[in-house]
Image (spheres, chains in turn blue, purple):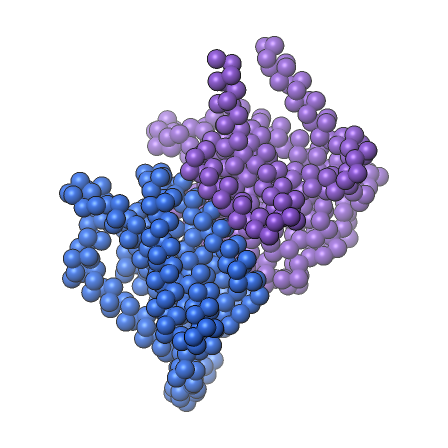
Length: 290
Length: 319
């Protein structure tokens, strides 16, 4: 591997990691607050990409899509939580199972409405070029993904640590029943959490679409990667999603380049290794294994 | 005592009726089609029954059970091709051993987790098996699938004719039901139920719960592998779908709709799922949505499943 290729692959890995962070942050937030692993997270991701596709086809505006898709998918999450998940509050496993059903319905409806062909979303104007990076050409869009990931990470960290909302989230993650006992309307908090988590999945779906395409089955890919990221990084914390994304993204990218036959074994090994040494994941707050 | 004899008699009649289905249905216009659909229901039923040993009996919600089903399907098909041997017992043995070994490797990590985390890990690990099957094109045919699976023979019995193959599937199904009934009523099975109810107490009583859970995981994997081998022989085709999350979800939905922790519930659930996916889907385009909504309804309103609902209704009528 020449130095130029190594730099390119490192950038690829980091940009994939940034995407994984955005994706996993939503999953982790919902888990942290509600103790629910949202298995419809991949379906929300896919829905975000398809909404973006529809917006871009009608208006040609990628940036509009990046705003509309999370709003639409977030609104769906905001409605689904009180409609379905609230009925099962306290029965966490059943809530998780419920999200499997949600995922089946969402993915099937997308297929009915949008068809089941592989589609592509064009790169936004201005980001469809390449720039020279250390002697090689590198696509600007992937650099944008890295920057966008860093921007969101900084924004989340700020909200998490400094704002009133962040205090609410930290309290809810720590002890939701206590938060409710202190007079906070926990129903609204949970609905909002589910909505924001869904919106984050949709943002990841829009950002990923120009690179990976829009196709049936993308929901499963996204779900599996986000599960791996939160297992490795640790569930329920923002820093866990960051650490997981930054480990899994580059590991996956370099694994596929260096030894394509064993790339999966590498990810498997990382998951297994982390779970053996750190049952909470790298920076998590709940024990995944004994 | 009389009740047990009556139950055993009813079971025997049901098993005989099942195995002789192609004979007594031969008058029907759509007997061939019905036999094919029933055969595939029984195959999915075997997968669901084996999954319920984990979900219902032991309380381990696995969302990656298709990994072992698919592994069994590929193993039987590849063994027949590479060894140029279509012996039924060799096929079943290879399928079981490969599926059980895979279950052992995944189980060592997965059974250390419980509840939601167990579900996440089985899902993630199974998806890696899926990707492996997708990549190993030389062995599995990759995304094209493994076509032209050789149907087995045994001591002059040839299972290549559709009716003969149905008999094989039906007899195996009955044997699997008996096996799982035997396991669930044994001391071993009671220990598994103990883990579901209160694992900490079982540990305090001196049970090695991790080893028990691992053994259940491997046993369930081996039975799923048998189901996979039968699936490959039935369709003469194995594809990455057989290892994918879709198949795992199918099995899980079957278990929950039918009734987890009941002897035949998962198989009944499998007939419902396959009816929707096979029969209903030919008349409406949104069959998968129907399945999803049905599943949501059962999870939210009827967690005990069809068998549980029937049992409640029956006890009300008797009172």
